[in-house]
Amino acid sequence: MLRVCYVAGQPNEPFGSIGREGRPGPPTDRDSPTMKQMHLGVFEVAGPQVGGTLSWPHPRSESLRFHELDHWIHIAQLLDAAGFDFLFFADGYGFPAIDGDLPDLAVRGGINFPALDPALIIPTLAHLTERLGFVVTSSTGLDHPVQTARRFATLDHLTGGRVGWNIVTGASQNTVAQLFGHTEMTQHDARYDQADEYVDLALTLWEGCWEDDAVVGDKTAGVFADPDKLHRIEYAGEHFRSSGYFTVDPSPQRTPVLFQAGTSARGRAYAARNAECVFVQGTTVDQTRANVADIRARAAENGRDPQSIRVMVGVTITVAATHDEALALRQEFDDLQTDEVVAVLYAGNTGIDLLALHPDLPLSQMNNGTGPAGQMGQSNIDRFLGTDGRPAPTVREILDQLRGRGTRGFEVVGSPTEVADQLEALMDDTDLDGFLLEPVFDPADLEDFAALVVPELRRRGRMPAVAATGTLREQLTASGDPHLAADHRGARFRVSPPAAVLAP
Image (cartoon, rainbow, N blue to C red):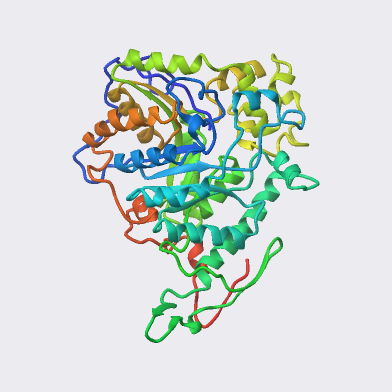
């Protein structure tokens, strides 16, 4: 998720100029019990670095330790103690590709390559933390829904109800199709058609097979479960079919918290129907505000409480005791970035090699509707095509915009008060519910934020003095209920004795 770059203490488009010592954001009643709380997550990959940029060679980064459990345990325990809501792992089988092959720079630079399976790390991290949630990406285009439902129900049991599913229709789709032996890549909108059915079947399995009190666990009577309270699933759709019983008994949340990342029009519509937490793309403040409003409006059209959806955006934060120290740290990161790094990242996300295009022309020089281009990474194509009467940027301008940003969201650089000011202002201006931190130097950036910014946010009433506990859903919604809300479409899949026969 690309961000508008604005640096505290310097002129900027969204918020104008602020002083070096910071200034308050939009007026808020910090003594009001109704002040909107700031939810926080951290965006990670089980690889050398986050966001398709270059940072692992820097002395402040320890991300080369991504193979080591101790590295992730330290991060999880740090976030748990600091009051973060969740640790989010992006994941996928794909890799950057230019002209159909893995570029040398991706290998040499560790740009979105390689990566482990983060789902296997989560049970250990949950065991060694008290309340932190864990979200992991899983695509609707590879495994059968039964496999995904079983995996997440197991994780929900092992974490005590602290797991979420980031639903994606695919990433690096052309390379994934080839890797799995498919003859062609499924087209963008068709993937969402398939994803609708995929989630429906998963919800059917989680919600529609076992009644709440089916598990008896009576040692004396020798009864594990009441067979009258299990219901056979019969599902027949265009893409998926299933007949039988779900083998995992109800977990604390039954359905994991449903996350969705994607800001295309189809993605927003999908999120409004299914997602409980949406990760929107941070391009400009105006666009973010519009995307948040659109998702909430669409949710209302689907009969959901629009404010119940937690909408968050990525943010890369560089904070230090003083403004100048923070700027210096950020500059050290920027000095590592090149056009080649940008090109590898963008090609992996969209199928487009920017360095192969004429630098003084916009993306429209390509035929974006055919082939890989235009069928993957749609949001990162659409954003550069020119909208609202503004001309489309040239390829040279796209490279400059993406340098040091990759797929990251907004950027904030400054002292603790400056960072808190900017986060408050951005949240209040756009109706966001919070942020996913995308560390540059990992875990140093997270340690700095926890030590310097979290106390300031607590002082302002944006974070509670004592972090919430319970399942991930309870922490995010403050509803006191670990299960899907009654107005979520998944509620219709709940078992209704004497049988659960559900169709799309």
